[in-house]
Length: 206
Image 1 (cartoon, rainbow, N blue to C red):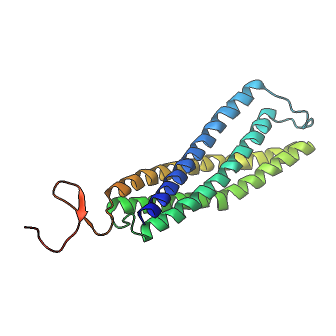
Image 2 (tube, rainbow, N blue to C red):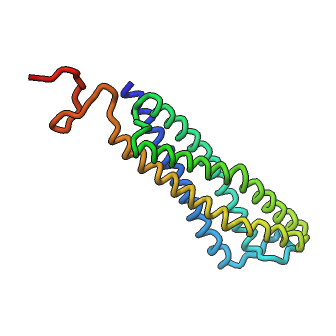
Image 3 (spheres, rainbow, N blue to C red):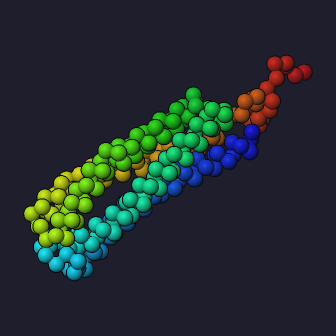
Protein backbone atom coordinates (compact mmCIF):
# COMPACT_ATOMS: atom_id res chain seq x y z
CA UNK A 1 0.00 0.00 0.00
CA UNK A 2 2.89 2.35 0.77
CA UNK A 3 4.43 1.82 -2.67
CA UNK A 4 0.97 2.27 -4.21
CA UNK A 5 0.63 5.64 -2.48
CA UNK A 6 4.09 6.77 -3.57
CA UNK A 7 3.24 6.10 -7.23
CA UNK A 8 0.12 8.26 -7.11
CA UNK A 9 1.99 10.86 -5.08
CA UNK A 10 4.50 11.18 -7.91
CA UNK A 11 1.75 11.27 -10.54
CA UNK A 12 -0.07 14.02 -8.66
CA UNK A 13 2.99 16.24 -8.13
CA UNK A 14 4.20 15.81 -11.73
CA UNK A 15 0.73 16.55 -13.13
CA UNK A 16 0.44 19.75 -11.08
CA UNK A 17 3.99 20.84 -11.92
CA UNK A 18 3.49 20.27 -15.66
CA UNK A 19 0.12 22.01 -15.53
CA UNK A 20 1.65 25.06 -13.87
CA UNK A 21 4.66 25.04 -16.17
CA UNK A 22 2.50 24.80 -19.29
CA UNK A 23 0.37 27.79 -18.34
CA UNK A 24 3.37 29.93 -17.42
CA UNK A 25 5.31 29.03 -20.56
CA UNK A 26 2.31 29.69 -22.83
CA UNK A 27 1.91 33.17 -21.36
CA UNK A 28 5.63 33.81 -21.64
CA UNK A 29 5.68 32.63 -25.26
CA UNK A 30 2.85 35.00 -26.21
CA UNK A 31 4.61 37.88 -24.43
CA UNK A 32 7.69 37.24 -26.58
CA UNK A 33 6.07 36.37 -29.92
CA UNK A 34 3.80 39.38 -30.39
CA UNK A 35 6.35 42.18 -29.75
CA UNK A 36 9.02 40.33 -31.75
CA UNK A 37 6.82 39.79 -34.82
CA UNK A 38 5.49 43.35 -34.59
CA UNK A 39 9.02 44.75 -34.67
CA UNK A 40 9.67 42.86 -37.94
CA UNK A 41 6.72 44.58 -39.69
CA UNK A 42 5.92 41.58 -41.92
CA UNK A 43 3.70 41.57 -45.01
CA UNK A 44 2.09 38.21 -45.67
CA UNK A 45 1.73 37.15 -49.30
CA UNK A 46 -1.10 34.83 -48.29
CA UNK A 47 -3.22 37.88 -47.36
CA UNK A 48 -2.58 40.28 -50.28
CA UNK A 49 -5.85 42.21 -49.94
CA UNK A 50 -5.85 42.55 -46.16
CA UNK A 51 -5.13 46.13 -45.12
CA UNK A 52 -4.89 45.53 -41.38
CA UNK A 53 -1.83 44.67 -39.30
CA UNK A 54 -0.13 41.65 -40.84
CA UNK A 55 2.09 41.22 -37.79
CA UNK A 56 -0.99 40.43 -35.72
CA UNK A 57 -2.03 37.74 -38.19
CA UNK A 58 1.44 36.18 -38.20
CA UNK A 59 1.90 36.29 -34.44
CA UNK A 60 -1.65 35.13 -33.82
CA UNK A 61 -1.23 32.07 -36.02
CA UNK A 62 1.82 30.97 -34.02
CA UNK A 63 0.41 31.83 -30.60
CA UNK A 64 -2.90 30.06 -31.33
CA UNK A 65 -1.13 26.76 -31.94
CA UNK A 66 0.81 27.15 -28.70
CA UNK A 67 -2.36 27.88 -26.71
CA UNK A 68 -4.24 24.97 -28.26
CA UNK A 69 -1.40 22.59 -27.38
CA UNK A 70 -1.36 24.05 -23.87
CA UNK A 71 -5.12 23.54 -23.53
CA UNK A 72 -4.73 19.85 -24.37
CA UNK A 73 -1.86 19.51 -21.90
CA UNK A 74 -3.88 21.28 -19.21
CA UNK A 75 -6.81 18.93 -19.76
CA UNK A 76 -4.60 15.84 -19.45
CA UNK A 77 -2.81 17.20 -16.37
CA UNK A 78 -6.12 18.18 -14.78
CA UNK A 79 -7.54 14.68 -15.20
CA UNK A 80 -4.38 13.08 -13.80
CA UNK A 81 -4.34 15.49 -10.86
CA UNK A 82 -7.99 14.80 -9.98
CA UNK A 83 -7.72 11.00 -10.32
CA UNK A 84 -4.49 10.81 -8.30
CA UNK A 85 -5.92 13.14 -5.63
CA UNK A 86 -8.99 10.93 -5.28
CA UNK A 87 -6.81 7.83 -4.88
CA UNK A 88 -4.55 9.51 -2.32
CA UNK A 89 -7.49 10.76 -0.30
CA UNK A 90 -9.65 7.64 -0.40
CA UNK A 91 -6.71 5.38 0.40
CA UNK A 92 -5.89 7.48 3.48
CA UNK A 93 -2.44 8.38 2.20
CA UNK A 94 -3.26 12.06 2.73
CA UNK A 95 -5.82 13.34 5.23
CA UNK A 96 -8.50 15.42 3.56
CA UNK A 97 -9.85 16.89 6.80
CA UNK A 98 -6.68 18.56 8.01
CA UNK A 99 -6.23 22.28 7.24
CA UNK A 100 -3.57 21.69 4.57
CA UNK A 101 -5.69 18.92 3.07
CA UNK A 102 -8.70 21.21 2.86
CA UNK A 103 -6.63 23.91 1.16
CA UNK A 104 -5.27 21.28 -1.21
CA UNK A 105 -8.74 20.09 -2.16
CA UNK A 106 -10.07 23.62 -2.45
CA UNK A 107 -7.18 24.63 -4.67
CA UNK A 108 -7.64 21.62 -6.91
CA UNK A 109 -11.37 22.26 -7.26
CA UNK A 110 -10.71 25.93 -8.05
CA UNK A 111 -8.04 24.98 -10.61
CA UNK A 112 -10.36 22.61 -12.42
CA UNK A 113 -13.22 25.12 -12.25
CA UNK A 114 -11.20 27.95 -13.77
CA UNK A 115 -9.84 25.64 -16.46
CA UNK A 116 -13.35 24.42 -17.30
CA UNK A 117 -14.61 28.00 -17.58
CA UNK A 118 -11.80 28.79 -19.99
CA UNK A 119 -12.03 25.67 -22.16
CA UNK A 120 -15.80 25.20 -22.25
CA UNK A 121 -17.08 28.78 -22.17
CA UNK A 122 -14.53 31.39 -23.23
CA UNK A 123 -12.21 29.51 -25.57
CA UNK A 124 -14.88 28.36 -28.08
CA UNK A 125 -16.13 31.93 -28.50
CA UNK A 126 -12.63 33.28 -28.94
CA UNK A 127 -11.73 30.55 -31.43
CA UNK A 128 -14.86 31.31 -33.48
CA UNK A 129 -13.97 35.01 -33.64
CA UNK A 130 -10.33 34.23 -34.37
CA UNK A 131 -11.15 31.98 -37.33
CA UNK A 132 -13.71 34.48 -38.62
CA UNK A 133 -10.94 37.09 -38.51
CA UNK A 134 -8.51 34.89 -40.39
CA UNK A 135 -11.05 33.82 -43.03
CA UNK A 136 -12.24 37.36 -43.69
CA UNK A 137 -8.64 38.61 -43.92
CA UNK A 138 -7.82 35.85 -46.39
CA UNK A 139 -10.80 36.82 -48.51
CA UNK A 140 -9.85 40.49 -48.34
CA UNK A 141 -13.08 41.36 -46.54
CA UNK A 142 -11.52 44.00 -44.31
CA UNK A 143 -14.65 45.30 -42.50
CA UNK A 144 -15.67 41.79 -41.41
CA UNK A 145 -12.09 40.96 -40.44
CA UNK A 146 -11.87 44.08 -38.28
CA UNK A 147 -15.18 43.32 -36.56
CA UNK A 148 -14.07 39.77 -35.75
CA UNK A 149 -10.66 40.99 -34.58
CA UNK A 150 -12.25 43.48 -32.19
CA UNK A 151 -14.59 40.82 -30.82
CA UNK A 152 -11.62 38.55 -30.19
CA UNK A 153 -9.57 41.33 -28.60
CA UNK A 154 -12.46 42.23 -26.28
CA UNK A 155 -12.18 38.79 -24.66
CA UNK A 156 -8.39 38.87 -24.40
CA UNK A 157 -8.16 40.55 -20.95
CA UNK A 158 -10.56 37.97 -19.49
CA UNK A 159 -8.57 35.14 -21.06
CA UNK A 160 -5.36 36.53 -19.56
CA UNK A 161 -6.99 36.82 -16.14
CA UNK A 162 -8.22 33.23 -16.32
CA UNK A 163 -4.73 32.04 -17.21
CA UNK A 164 -3.27 33.95 -14.26
CA UNK A 165 -5.99 32.56 -11.97
CA UNK A 166 -5.30 29.02 -13.19
CA UNK A 167 -1.58 29.40 -12.51
CA UNK A 168 -2.25 30.81 -9.03
CA UNK A 169 -4.71 28.05 -8.13
CA UNK A 170 -2.44 25.26 -9.38
CA UNK A 171 0.54 26.73 -7.51
CA UNK A 172 -1.51 26.96 -4.30
CA UNK A 173 -2.67 23.36 -4.81
CA UNK A 174 0.88 22.12 -5.30
CA UNK A 175 2.17 23.88 -2.18
CA UNK A 176 -0.79 22.74 -0.06
CA UNK A 177 -0.34 19.17 -1.28
CA UNK A 178 3.31 19.13 -0.26
CA UNK A 179 2.39 20.43 3.20
CA UNK A 180 -0.50 17.95 3.51
CA UNK A 181 1.72 15.05 2.47
CA UNK A 182 4.34 15.97 5.07
CA UNK A 183 1.83 16.36 7.89
CA UNK A 184 -0.35 13.33 7.15
CA UNK A 185 0.36 10.20 9.21
CA UNK A 186 -0.29 6.69 7.92
CA UNK A 187 -3.09 4.95 9.81
CA UNK A 188 -1.96 2.96 12.80
CA UNK A 189 0.95 5.25 13.59
CA UNK A 190 1.19 7.77 16.36
CA UNK A 191 3.96 10.28 17.09
CA UNK A 192 6.49 9.00 19.63
CA UNK A 193 8.05 11.24 22.31
CA UNK A 194 11.24 11.70 20.30
CA UNK A 195 9.27 12.86 17.23
CA UNK A 196 9.55 9.62 15.23
CA UNK A 197 6.50 7.67 14.19
CA UNK A 198 5.79 4.58 16.28
CA UNK A 199 2.91 2.07 16.28
CA UNK A 200 0.00 3.29 18.39
CA UNK A 201 -0.79 1.05 21.33
CA UNK A 202 -3.71 1.12 23.82
CA UNK A 203 -1.37 -0.14 26.61
CA UNK A 204 1.04 2.07 28.47
CA UNK A 205 4.63 1.00 28.58
CA UNK A 206 6.37 0.51 31.90
